[in-house]
Length: 229
Image (cartoon, rainbow, N blue to C red):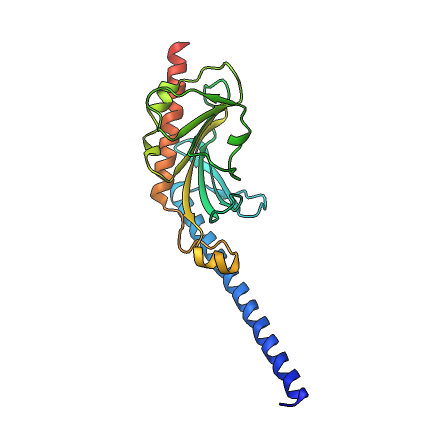
């Protein structure tokens, strides 16, 4: 094979590889757009006035709207922070209405590494648990010496019997539940280091279930506070 032929062949191969990479990039962008549109449709099937208020943060999409007369926020987060683990995709569902608690109450299930969706690791005080909380739950707060209605909160943690339920956050500004949607495809992440989650979209029934759980807990806390006043 002549030197010229070798050069032309190498150029053709390089051109083919570049073209294939460009095709893969376009296909990935198209899949991402389709997945975002599907998620938006799922969110709006439960929160019809939901608007995308994302701030451009990588891997994070945020919607805000109203549900049953309450302000709500839904967010999906791709977490690539944990080392030696596959990237994960989380769904955060919040009722962003006042709650009668004296500070931050954060219940995390099986906390074993830092996350991108929570400030749990930065809360300085660990709370003792009353009977009724999940065995794998750890409770933290931002204020020492404050009292939370733990018996009432524990009575509303049934959903955390499921392994995908990860966090319950209660603050004076609202109630949030975080749920594991999916882990990245192992093969694709191992080869290409791309966090692909296949067809793991957001189930409207899950959105409604988490909103109901957060809303019921908020109403119970506020009702007890009114009765005690």
